[in-house]
Figure 1 (cartoon, rainbow, N blue to C red):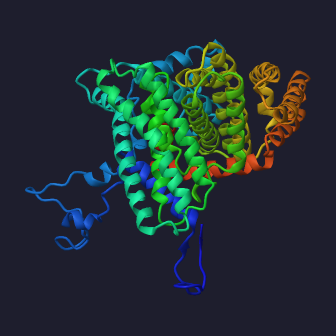
Figure 2 (figure 1 turned 180 degrees about the vertical axis):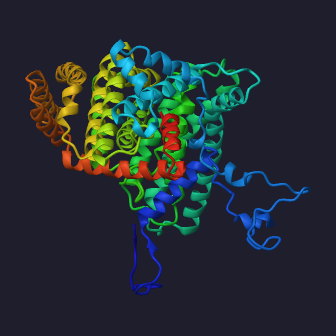
Figure 3 (figure 1 turned 120 degrees about the vertical axis):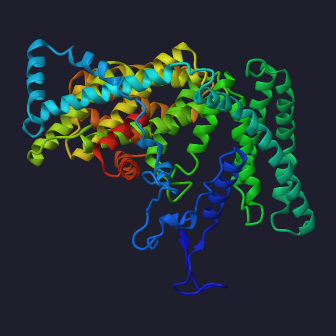
Length: 557
């Protein structure tokens, strides 16, 4: 967000003046990326500057010429600069999985499916084409998952990357400490030069003093690396990192509430970098630290409250925030800040992913279709999505994903069981809303199809709420207001599903959102923005090719 004006140095219609929040967001993003080793792309030259062959006037006429002594094969520079989403990592291995899936069809349906496949493509029934697209997508996802689970060869590039990833948290720790000490000293020198009359002197001087404690804790963690075995930090080092992360969070929260001024923005950005590094190393399993850093970095600027380009609005964010607060009070009450932040990042990004995939599946139909009427194609697209969603929920794919997420975050078996049930239900509901909005259809039919899965999630939510209400540690106002309202809305949702009142379920869900300080309208608005961003991303990387879009979706999953 920017502004224009006629103040000092300004003029009507002149260049936009960045607001304070724009400066903060830019500083935070750039310094975090630099400290964590995420380097900005340095290739900014035009093709004509890199090689004269890319100049339209080269050797008379349009460029891309080739000679025997200076060959050019298929414009290699452009190919190297294309997104990784364009690469298909499944190869042809998915074909056997595809055949196994097809052969599970009932005999009469298999015969019809085979006969349709033998027809010229434009003469096939769109519904059977949709079913074939679902089988292909499922086979590719399963193959991709199996390939990713295989241990790489010791001499492979994947093995080298794995080693580098495991070292990332320790490199980030060293870099964050080094930057932290330098920034703290520079800020101290700046305040000394400005003197006690400087407007922000007292506030920043207090912050810089408080920073000494977490910096010392992080230095102690760094010193303990020499005795680290198998990449796993000692319990003492993890405890020190956890304490540093909590102190940094307190300092950051205090600093964010202050009027910062333009001169010391770097201090806040550096504190956030230190917090990410400390939090990553305070996870119970150190090998999860690289994933935390990746998720924390990917989440920078993701919320519209933090960036004008953020895809996640306040409604969508409120759902995730309240879910995580509930987990922290109940299922993961014994876990530290790192576990909570890890699960929060995994949940937020997965909700965005599943929501956008629901919309993209409706738009693409998961593949190519014969030339038929637009209504027939729309129906086939919806059928493909509906079938894919049923496969994902009935196979437990979504629930297993969240079981792994909670395990990575350090949740115990009970947290994994109940938490995955709730999160998969919320994800499924968001996918239903997203797909229904894109297809411009009533969501109740999809809710009816997924009612057993949704009901299981509601039952798990009821169980957690009973445990929360019995905990004396919960503040009285939470017990009387928010938790009671959520419990009532959850009960209404359960009653609606039990009585097959799917409109009632939508009403209960709307009440639930309101008890979480948001609304169904706000959620739908945020979903529309997420889908728009996803459509632009996939559309750009796939060059409009449906096959490339399909590959892109598989690689995202």
